[in-house]
Amino acid sequence: MSNSTEMTPPPDWDDDERMNFMFSDFKENRDVNTTDWDSKMDFWTALVVKSCRDRGTVCVNLQELNKTFRRKEKSPLGLATVLQSMARCGKIQRESEFAANVDCGWLSWGVGLLLVKPLKWTFSTLLGSGRVPLEESFVVIELVKEKATELLRVYRSSEFASRSILSFQELCALSSDVCVDESTMCMALLQLQRDKQVMVSLHEGEKIVKFSQPGQDRVSTVSDVDIGIYQLQRSEKLLGERVEKLGLEADKCREEAKLLLSEGKKSQALRCLRGRKRVEKRADNLFAKLETIRGILDRIAQSQTDKMVMQAYQAGVSALRLSLKDVTVERAENLVDQIQELCDTQDEVNQTISTGVTGADEDTDELEEELKSLLDESKPDSISGLPEVPTKPLRPSREPSLPGYQQKKITSPAKRLEPAQ
Image (cartoon, rainbow, N blue to C red):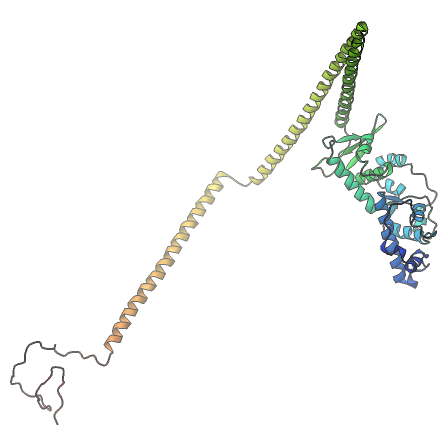
């Protein structure tokens, strides 16, 4: 593999037999061997994307691929076919067409900034059997979307997140760790423009980039208010730099005066001190202007916050009005009365059910008692109607004998009268 790239080679890069197959050209007709065709196409498609990701770029051309994948003084023969297939599947797109798919207001900026040269061949030729130019650059759609997402994240986590508009130079410095070059950053910006997350425009010959703020689905157009705030922020930055520079100059004058005084050059030291006083006076004037600009920016920020709060209040009032549209005091009182009536009815039903169950239990207890008394009466050894056992000695008495029975001597009160023989 070429030393000009930092891409990690695939595991089977040293397998000569497999690489000889992969480096061979594609058959003219895919139907001859569909499996081999698809296997080779998948291998090179994944490797093209991986090589761009490892190098941190989002664009690729045939000439770079031939150098990147060079092995044992040989380059793959089917890379042009791979690019054609990736273009048909929408995995890559020419730079010019990628820029042209953005809004019309962006077309001149994108083409001029990226220096996309007019092409003499059409995209339909690329998708056919035509030759792919070696230097023609293509955008890898998957990678440019990743870069766009990363660039937006870096902006929102930076010190510039509170500013909706940045200069192009500020954005270049901010994205230096994300985008390897300016072309990559521009492609990421174009993707963000397609996603309606940024808007790029010119102000006094300077490119400015406006980002969407958190909570916004899409970025708004650059308004006069945005331009005014941007100018104030630029003035604040410039005045701050000048005040700092004058402060350093005043310190330098003071050090020179000390040095001259130590050398006995009193008059020259006095001139240095007078110069220091003039510098400090200019610094004080600039600092006063700087504080005025900062006060204006603070008021603008407060007004924007007040506007947001008012919009939230208005939305809340509208929502509350809609939610209470069919609610009145009379209706609420009626509903409360109905609820109380239903609760009273439920209490009565519960009481009735409880009473019914208790009565049933009492009836069951009475029936159990009656059943027990019946069982006692039906015992065979129980005799009813007999006199009580006497507790005093019995006297002999003359009583007529019962017909059909013979009177015997009673020896025990518990014995019965036996029938006569």
